[in-house]
Length: 288
Ligand code: PHE
Ligand code: CO
Image (cartoon, rainbow, N blue to C red; front, top):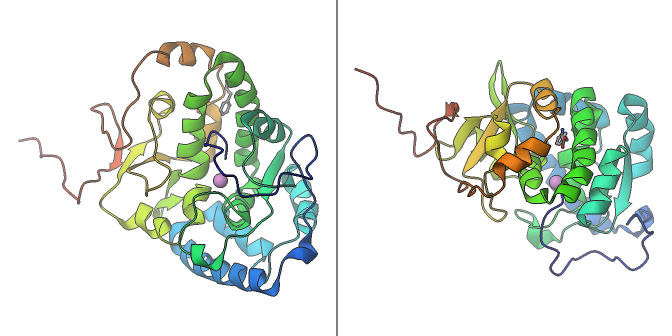
């Protein structure tokens, strides 16, 4: 993801190419790395049937990468055939311009290093498990894949317009923490939840967070926290809704939002279409 702070970045940025890519030196992963990967994968894969959207479930099953840290090249053969996307190996978080440039050209940057065993439950920075398990399956969905490319192109434009903060909120509340309505109920499609053992059940089952119908301008005006479970999630009906709502030129939206104070992460507005109100299950008063 982009738009984060770049404090103490963990990856090795020394040998990278100008576009921030590196080789994935697969032979450098240790048996302990692969064992930790298997544990991470097994925990998440067990949650997916209950909490993930159908598109994610189906891709994950077809990919079958639970036994070891995947070789990006092997996945690329399947991925390019499916949607024309390609994974590129990177040392870690990228500057916005480099990140947007990859997405705009249907290249998804995947961090090469894996977290330490002590970070089994929680990690702030994206590692190969988050990037791969969370993001790669939906790159196989044609509509979602198009949305992500459009987002990359939109990022390049937002930089020129000084609107990165607004656009980053959209990434956060869709690509990272998005929920989707399905016939079976609300399910997750955001990578930040799909790669989290705790937040994946929480975002669907808990009465605490707000689940608010997708609203583009409202999202671009809503701050987010990076170090706690989300207080609000935004719910789409289908990936096409994302693609179509974001198709117009954002220039007038940015102008309209500029100078308006952002909403707090947990704020609920009278105009919100609530999929399910948070706050310990309290329901709004019935009209009498
Ligand atoms: N339509 C947006 C613009 O003109 C670009 C965009 C597409 C942004 C998809 C986000 C997601 O800036
Ligand atoms: Co991510």
